[in-house]
Length: 253
Length: 335
Image (tube, rainbow over all chains, first blue to last red):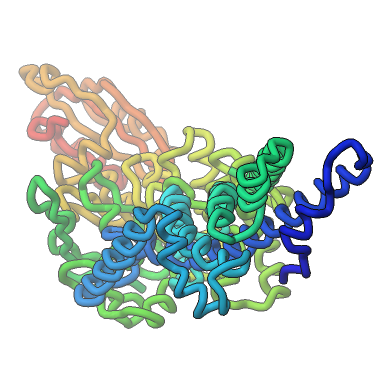
């Protein structure tokens, strides 16, 4: 959970500027603002990524196995069940496409009531987790679907021929074999969420987006604007490097 | 062990309906290494996939240990699949799992204890000669080593039937030979029944006890390998099994008669042709010949041109038969 953080107004007043202020006071002032923004961003992105990855893996796997001519056709023989599976695929596909076509700024406002129901408020970083998660799920689902789609069908057949159940195929073949691709997808997702979270900051979501808005824009603090950009770039670089490293370590092909 | 009865399978494609299998019936007995040979599109892979229930046949029965596979589904079908092993042409190994874990896969999904898995996988790695590769990933192995992993995996759950679908077709000739000899050893050691799908004659000769020749979705000829090999009946079987080249002009030479003699086993060791020339007043010349091992039995084939009196030639043929050497005139038998 998010620790107790100082309010933005309090932070703004922590440094008066002018010749009388020491350099140390300035550094501390910047540090407090930037650390609050960064903590909130990491908090929002962290939780939203976690939820989106979990749901995305489930949806993506369902999309993959229900694809017409996909692996369900190797295990299911009943044509009625086959048709039902196709319908599930279409419905889920449509929901995901609709979700992906709503611009994030609109989505945030669209889910204000939902945020209020789930977290009891429509402002703040915790509330912002809701639209971030909803925006990320369709994206993650497609990423998981395509990572699974890159697998050789032969290994799935080998598992079926060995007598594996559908769940065993998912957990012992599909997910471990596509792990490098999934990790690359998670990296992409987290980076996207970092940029999305900045947008959430504009409507009271906190984080680095709000720092840029309330200091850089409203208070004309060009210095803070630049620090915000630097922190964002660093965050993205770290995630990208870490993701690539893990993905490579997992890839034994 | 396995009885296939009137099995049919069609595929519907944009170009129309393709009859992959037409009323195929075949009996496979325990311990046999039963080869299916045919050109691509002959239906042999469809047959293998139907037998392992990777594909559903349109009609017909596949009786495996008393149960009809085509009627099973769900858990019952998975139980049957655990009694069968499948070796794939392209190995189909888990690329993100070690050799050990690949071989352990069927045991893990059968929820065996880890002590049992360790013991069984070590046994199998020794059997296929990969003990030192336990922790290696498939990407670091050669094609032959990958197929050894594939074979070990197929044997892991102690199946009674192993289906090899073009198991050596992606391998070079030397590796093919080593894989074939491994399968033969396993067959001899464990008594496992094998179904071997191939388009290569050498696989049948080196490995199989029985063979079925497939064409256009049908089995056109089948039986013990020696029988089909030494006396192929259908043109397709002849094309697969006889390498000797005979010029049609030889056969049409006046007053000359061309025969094919087949020597099997012991007969290949005797100086039989020498006997024939000493015993009969004939002129005999050898036009072509070869000798090879078929499932461990030596089989020799000679194309002979024999000229002499009509009645003496009759006697010569009788003498061949007395000594258990096959002989057949080739005038109507151009290959």
